[in-house]
Image (cartoon, rainbow, N blue to C red; front, side):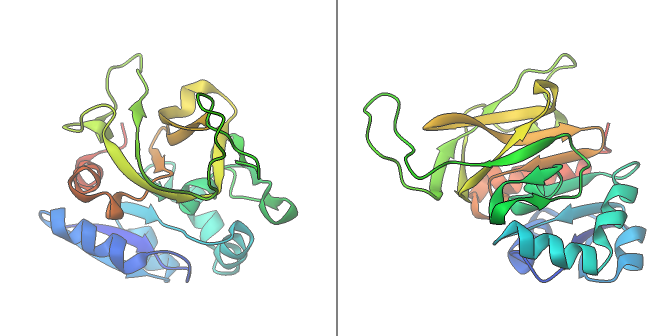
Length: 218
């Protein structure tokens, strides 16, 4: 039986993520673990996250999960969710500047205190919270396997004040519009990560988790 490990470093919707994975799991055991050895043995790994990036990175480093994530991302499918996605970048401007894991080149920026709708000029609330359309990015090799069965421009659930700015457009797997166009999902090799919360996104979120449990990282 395959296993998928949800990394438990004390920050994230761990049980919500685990329950969503369990709802779509076939011949796959879902574990929530803070044991690096147990996570290392899993076939697939999920890095969730909510809250301030400085606190998240502090616990990730304290538990040694920064090195572990770099290790497993080489040959195992890895899914980052929300702040778990941001943690995969090189740095974030949050909390006065925070160094992140650095698997993906790029940085995390702030929406700002005066974000405006480009059409109406109306001020937009930060954090960006609620449902929004996700535009899948075209790729040279065709649609990414993680989007299988998910209609382009499907709506997913977001809660965030910061957004990922990849160093190269090749990393972008999807985008979203909220005052600006920002990156909603990234991918590189065995890594796929989303700014939105699949576990809060009803049937399309479950479809994405189901795709992750089938994805071989190629």
